[in-house]
Amino acid sequence: MASSTEQFDAVIVGAGFAGMYLLHRLRELNLSARIYEAGNDVGGTWYWNRYPGARCDAESLAYSFSFSSELEQEWEWSERYAPQPEILKYARHVSERFDLRKDIQFETLVVSAHYRDDSEDWVIETDKGNRAIAKYCIMATGCLSVPQLPDIPGIDHFQGNLYQASKWPHEPVSFTGQRVGIIGTGSSGIQAIPVIAEEADHLYVFQRTANFSVPAANGPLDRDWVSEFKKNYRAHRKNHKIGNGSGFGDLQIEPRIEIKAPILRAEVSDDEATALLEDAWRSGGAKFMSAIGDQLMNEEANKFAREFVYRKIHETVKDPETAELLCPTNHPIGTRRICVDINYYDTYNRDNVSLISVEDHPIEQITEKGVQVNGEVFELDTLVLATGFDAMTGALLRIDIQGAEGEKLVDKWHAGPRSYLGLAVAGFPNLFTITGPGSPSVLSNMLVSIEQHVDWIMDCIGHMKTNELTVVEAEQLAEDQWVEHVNEVANMTLFPNGGSWYLGANVKGKPRIFMPYAAGVGPYREICDAITADGYKGFSFH
Ligand code: FAD
Ligand code: NAP
Image (tube, rainbow, N blue to C red; front, side, top):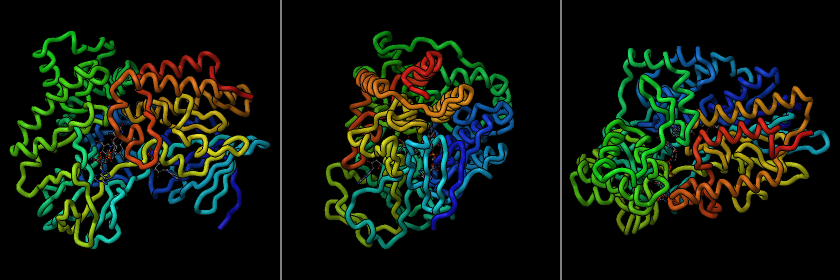
């Protein structure tokens, strides 16, 4: 199995948007690099998640690369929120336009990455027998790339078709004339349910926890509007990168560069607050979460927004009992990723859709014929699992990563991830992580965060090249202080009350730590830039 050893300046793990942009930037520095990618194409998330209804929840004009003006001018998005096939096509286009594919080895899983203290380099090994030696090892393994299967007995016994949202087949899947069940009502389930319902004979939705969802107000993009928008693209991109928001941007023709102080709940009357929420609901998308500036900080403001959504659910869903079941009661709105949907609540008005709450009566087992709840078996032809991911740390901890003196990442992170800025880990020299725990990552428009991380790392590597430095490492004290700061910021918000995958709460035995940095992409970028300006404070070099 073992093949000859190859040598690169950098090895990148993963060929999603992060890995692709890394490769492009490394080449600009005249550094050699190889990407190993488990899938057989680029695109990462958009390669794997092909379930019906999959599309982005950040607007495409913002959820796309900004590093090349030519790319952003020439690419035409068809809809406000592009569907998965179009985003995958975009990823492929990027890989071809920048000639990336020749340095990507597909269908290859990285199984280990070990740092060698004597030669100050990394040895990376794959399941295909590759052995690569590189000065830098960069993990672009994704925050949501390891599917989490439900811990329900009998899942292997099901005799019908079984599909996972995050590992959807490449061939078309038909639901026509079928009794379909779906487990999971997070973003994936909420996108898939309305589309499957249109085709299936009957759809049974097994809901354990209701989630908040806001309408996408999706639709085709008007070409004239887009060309006007594109005249201001640079200003828009700048707008996405600053402020304490999440990088979703303000997609008006005229960009709003000046960040206005957010309107707080206490500053407006009930009627005014309702009008703000109503406007955000009508215009669509995740920006609903910033309609009132302190919705995620202040329980009163959050309750006001929750009650607004409850009213919307009850106005939309005709059966009051179903409407009540769809109202989330166990977490503040936004503390689990807000879902963005197309006709989700309205789907429950269809005669061929049944909502089965499994909150009080968990799914007992999956039998050969279907899903058993409270003694009753719901017979199914097809079962869809939209049960989420081992998020943020899952992909990193599945690789045997060993740093200086053989320290294992899995040991270092046994009580939860510890990282400096989500970019580097003390004791793991010349290893970088993209959108790692401790960075805004999953709380943000990920393309904004990915580009910022890659640019920061490239500046750091460029600095090392210029100054003929061999090794960079996060200092232990800097890492400890950053972890403390991330926790402090989280505790100023309502996020820790969400009980979601942000905290690792969906994976049995996973430490409960709020993993992302909640201060927003602007302040985070300022901190990273200040660290660079201060001679890479908190990093040591030699
Ligand atoms: P990924 O796209 O996850 O790519 C990581 C790649 O690494 C994968 O292809 C994986 O196969 C590979 N890999 C992992 N481990 C190994 C290994 N050991 N060896 C080899 N290869 C490996 N974010 C937003 O901001 N807006 C959205 O609208 C949005 N929608 C999403 C929809 C879905 C269904 C999901 C699951 C996530 C969504 N996200 C969204 C988050 C999304 O993951 C990011 O936006 C972005 O695509 C991440 O890019 P990435 O390159 O960092 O990681
Ligand atoms: P998720 O939000 O973690 O949802 C998983 C769902 O499965 C939850 O409803 C969960 O219920 C349910 N579940 C798990 N095990 C179960 C069991 N044994 N019995 C019953 N229900 C069970 O995962 P996701 O929907 O894949 O989304 C993950 C993240 O990916 C999102 O938050 C978002 O960041 C990203 N994403 C974005 C989009 C988009 O709109 N562009 C689409 C998909 C995904 P509990 O909550 O009770 O555990």
